[in-house]
Image (cartoon, rainbow, N blue to C red; front, side, top):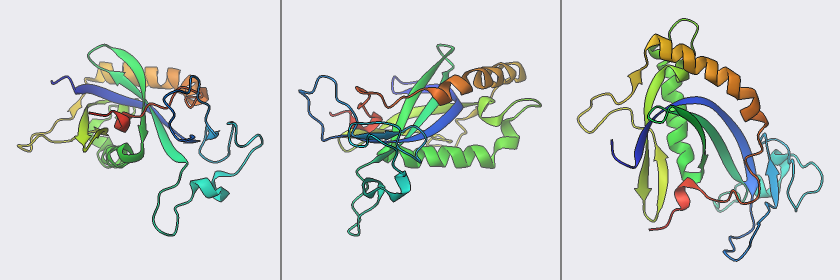
Amino acid sequence: MSKDEIRVSLLAMKYSRVLWDKYNPKAENPEPKCKSSNGEISTGGNLYKQAQICAQCKFAQWSKDGTPPLCNDVYQLLMWDHQDEFPFIISAKRTSIYPLRKLKTALKMTARKWAWPDTVANASVSILMKTKQVENYWVLDFPQRDHRGAPLWQRLPEEKSLELTKVAYDLSKTFSELDLNEPGDQTETEATPN
């Protein structure tokens, strides 16, 4: 494997939204203008001191000329790193959301292929996660096949699948309660310059 790819299992995922001011490299502790831990109602930020419904907010809407919303969808992924045998959290934002949707669809469509009795499919498959350069930024990618058409995903042994299913259940409540849109969390997978 190259340095820009690792083998992972997806243990859990959660959706949130965040609206930041324009990036200022001199700001010491930037605070989001608005954030929502569930993507439905604002839960903090310096712009909205009281709850705002995300679906009704002008910052969450596409403009008539096709300009994307200023408020960003953010998917937090709780992953298991098979090399280090340790969980980690990574954010999928903006242009990494499309590959994430493809991953979710592929997992749903092939779930019976991976799952063992008493396991969940996403904790029963080792997925190749890569970063892929697009222009001057990087996106997440979860390829299912290599350039020759050989499968890149691998079914885990039943014992490992049972272990990761337990880890997923054990960590899911704590993971769902984490506020991962805290100040200072402005780094994005796709924002790494050349």
